[in-house]
Each structure stands twice: as C-alpha cells, then as structure tokens.
Amino acid sequence: MALGKKSNKKSDGMMSKDLGSIFKKKSSPAKKKRGKSKTFISLDIGSSDIKMVAGNYNNDDIEILSFDSIKQEKGVCVAGVVNNENAVTEYLSNLVRRSRVKERDVIVSVDTPEIMRREMVIPAMEEKLILSTVRFEISEFLPIDIDKYIIQYSEIDRYVENDTEKINVMIYAFPEIAARQYFDIVRSAGLNPVALDIQSNCIRKLLYNRNINNYSLRDQTVAIIDIGNESMNLTIIKNGRHEFNRMVRGNVSISSVFVENGICSESNVDNIIDRYTNQNLFTTNLGMDELRIQESIISLVDIWIADILKLFQYYTSRSNKNSIDRIFIYGGGSRIKNVDHYIGTRIGIPTNTIESIQGVKFPPSARNRELAKYINCISAIIEK
Image (cartoon, rainbow, N blue to C red; front, side):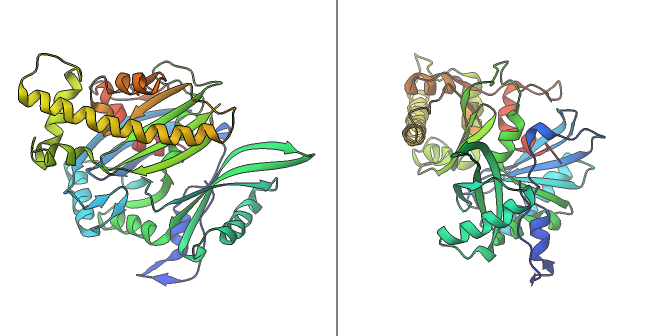
C-alpha cells in the first residue's frame, strides 16, 4: 500500500503525518523481503469482538504463536466504526492482560463502509509519482475534502492500450479521524501501533501464490467473503491480483436474528453458533425450539446469499469475461457447519469455508475452524 498523506498540522498531541507513517507502504507480492522474522500483534476490531493474533512472517511462511478474542458490548464498534473509544480501549487492555502476550508492536487490519473505494486507470509512471497523481485525480471526482483522508492505493494490473502502458489501481480513501481513533486506542492500551492496513489488501497478499484447502488459485477467479456480525466484505482475486472489493453493511446481524426472535439473549448468541459448528445445519427430526433456531439461521443465510448475488451480478456485468470459479468464506458466519455447501448450492458455485492456507502454521491445539475466525489478523502480518 502507498504511504498516506503527510501534514504538519497538530491534533491531540499527535502529528497528522504520524497517521500516514503507520500505514503500510505498497509493495508487490512478488517482491517479498526475506530476513529475520519479528513477532507482531495483529488486531481485528470487529462489531462483536476483538480478535488478536501474535505471529511472525518469514520466508513466505506465517507462524501463529498465539491467538485470542474478547467479546464487546453491542454498539461499541459497528462495522469497523468505533462508537466508544474508551470501551474499545478497555476491552483491548483486558485482552492483552489475559493473553499475557509480551510483544508490543501492533498491526491493525481495518475495514469499514467509511472507506471510499474507487478504481482508476493512470498512465504508467515511476512508483514515487503514483501517489501524488492518485491524490490529484481523486480530488477531482470524489466529493470529499482530501486533506481529511489518508489515501492508499493497490495496483490491480498493467496493460498496453494504443501503444501506451497504463496502470489500473484500486484507490482507498480512509478518514483521518478514524485512523487517529485506532492509533489512540492501541497507544492507550499500552501498545505500539506500527501499521494499519485495509483488510481486502491483506487478504490479497495472504493468498498470493498460496493454496486454500489444498486448492490452487493459479489461473482462477475466486471470491473471498468475510461474513461478520454486522457486515460482509467480498474480495475477488483473479490470477493472484486484486480484482474487485465491496463491503456491505448488513440490515440484519447474526446477533439480532436470535435476540429479536426471542431465541436467546445477546450473551448467549455465541453458544448457539458454537452448537452449529458441530451440528449439521440441515439436521432433521428436531424439536420445536431447535427447529426455530434452524429456520432463523437459514433465513439469515438467505439474506447473505441475496447480497452476494447482487455483488456478483454487478461484477460480471462489467465485462463478459468476468466470472467466478470458486467461493471461499471465513469470519463468524462461516462457523456454522455446512453453511458453505448451502451457499454454494443456492448460488451454483463451489463454496468452501477456509480451513487451511498454504504456509500458515497454527498451533497444533487449534481447530481448523479457528483459522476462519482469525484470517484478517493473520493476513495483516505479511510484509511487516
């Protein structure tokens, strides 16, 4: 990712340029640096919980040393938007103390509907000139005060048109005030923030030249879908390159389905989901209470499917060459047993929950389904 904007303005004792400096610099996945590994804490601050991984990246392998999560009260953070900074800081501090991690350098993987995304085609140029060009172009066609945003970009591809080389880039405009929130939360928890990165970009780097569930992504177009409590993040990767990304803020959350239908309280939602990590979603001969839970889950999954289909239809309508070969899902919603097969059957595309990724080493005691929960954390460790 490109370095964010710099400024000499001061705010709350922190230079704005520090916000840019903790964003990861852009680099091609094909140019990964090899050297001594360093262990980092990686955070994914979601709507229902904060997930934390301690691990390192070395010689294309990611070693996960420990992982943990802590539940958050409803509304504290919604779809990546922090509504109560003090509460999130307290939850994070408690998680760090409980986990007894010794590392202090932190990478935060973020995504929120507040991040504006746009594709742009620019003439090929030196890498050092791309960011300034992108900033100028985006200020021309986006209705934002660009000085209040940190601009990042990711190269999608290069091609020649009319004897002129061009670059297709994905632009991210991240609100500076949101970046400052994450920075302050990490610092207030006694940790050292060293990088922020967009989750879809992290996923692209994680899956570059790696097999998922022993399935090769080479020469394939795959959709990677993070099904969270309050939102869904869909990234399409074609031949190892970032092709498309959209985040959908859900009208119905996983928690609200159970609470509003009177199935359980907010604090017991995880117990219901845990039960369905082992119990087949399509189990028959159920009692009335179990049947009501099953019907609620299926109705929720049908909403997810409708959202996925809308995004697929948009993507495929952009070019008659666009198609999806396979879907992989992860996140809280993927924990439901056989939900991947249900989604695949309804959409008509092979679908699997991510259970293994080539080069990712998890502790032997971890279950396969733990990987799907912590993928955003794991992917952020790369290149830092």
